[in-house]
Length: 52
Picture 1 (tube, one colour):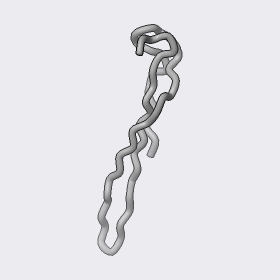
Picture 2 (cartoon, rainbow, N blue to C red; picture 1 turned 90 degrees about the horizontal axis):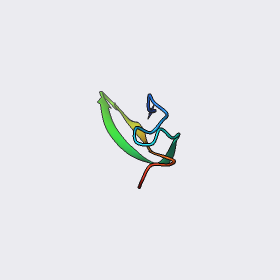
Picture 3 (cartoon, rainbow, N blue to C red; picture 1 turned 30 degrees about the vertical axis):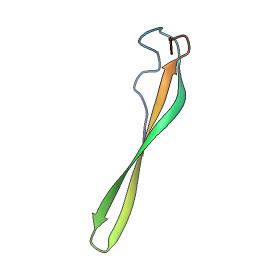
């Protein structure tokens, strides 16, 4: 499951957001006699002209 941002511009510089990494969490889901892993991926972004 991939979670994308609703906006594409930086709040600080109004520049285009670019992906600089991602955070991944996993959730163990248990069903009788069945296991599954749901992976959540959250992108990390920063404005092109924003200060570090």
